Image (tube, rainbow, N blue to C red; front, side, top):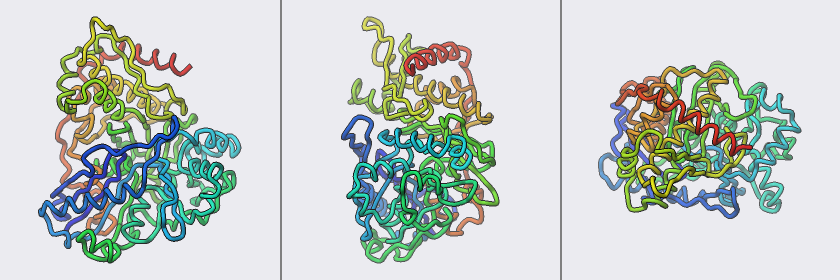
Length: 492
């Protein structure tokens, strides 16, 4: 008995098959091998084609099957993780009407700010737990105001995971968690926010049927089953945004537990049992995967748009022929502090933790007679670690005091230098696990299908691979102060 997990990432699609009995991953693939393009028609815009996601998801599943490490007909449930906050719109025939406006697109900032003021800042924060900001609801309002003819054809709006589930099953559903990440959900009234809909002039009929996150969201259609070599009728039983899913895959489910990831974007995600919010909406609160009316589990999310994307930019422009592993080895040759180079890794759209300001990425203090590649790559990793510290301090202001942070041994955490710098700069120990979003989605599918009685049971075999404690915090503290002063000047 096997479980299939799909992770709709910004860079690529990952797919995994997990043995439901042993909880072990049998196979994982990525498709395509090159990073998927983000279309930026204008500065601050970011779009991707939903149909590209779907084509790549199909190819990933076929690539999995071709490994011949399992019988595809024995897969019993499908789980989906996806890049958060993206807007997908379809007509009555389920045809995609435009490219998705994805998470790092900044065009709707002004719409969100207008809604925040008109609805009332305190009411937004109390009921929505967020400013409407640059989230999915504001993106939809932008489409309504700027593409009215296209808007008139919309039958349903979706988050990226809802769209992929629709392509598998032909059914369109969503969840409270998905609606909360789009800032459509009123937590106090337990309903779609009338305030948001009324201000933006949006029709509630555009919202899909709302189902529990762990539940059946449709069954694999006969044609798609034949195409992918799977059994007809197997259910999609889990859909979650990538960061709540990352927390699930790290068994971060209880209040006070905290997860981190440093992929394309960087995130610290803590679980709370309160409907909490930041007065400046620099961090955001959404319904966690195990949120219910009886047990209000929320995820407090700190997002940095430009982490892995900053490292990727540096690689392509300073050492395109080196692997990331080689870059990490090169960076380790430079001393703590990178001989004075400082990096602000904020070049991937407006940053919520910076009050939706856009500073652009900045590489400062380069001495042409002193610095080399190793200093540049270390400075990028340190700049990213400093940005995590800045964000963690905001979470601390809001009452979150993590004693340990769990992270997957993936992306930037594969760098020993970065992992230790993260611990030294934040002052918080880190537990590293074998972790993958698509594996988490597969186990989520098992929870939704009832294969596991509880979420905790799904992660009974979860083991710590490495435990890191602060070693160089005294060296990093003045360097962080220097970096923070540079950021403050850039924000003026």
